[in-house]
Length: 83
Image (tube, rainbow, N blue to C red; front, side, top):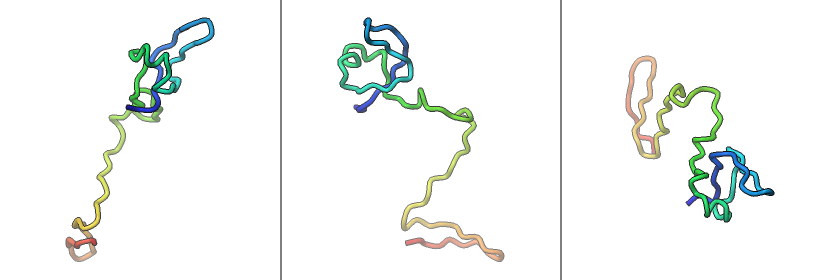
């Protein structure tokens, strides 16, 4: 379980406690434990972006040690073992 959660709604909980959507709360706080449906551990829900996620370029994962990698030269393309 995550150590922190994000408030998913805004509400006056008591006279002294106001819950604001997007606030970070400790996952073990009594309010969070009593009302887990008001919170989420999914940071994607509040992450800021300059472009929608669907428009982000797909990046190929880096190759790990020992995996072949294509190296292109002017006159030929060859696979080399990178150790």
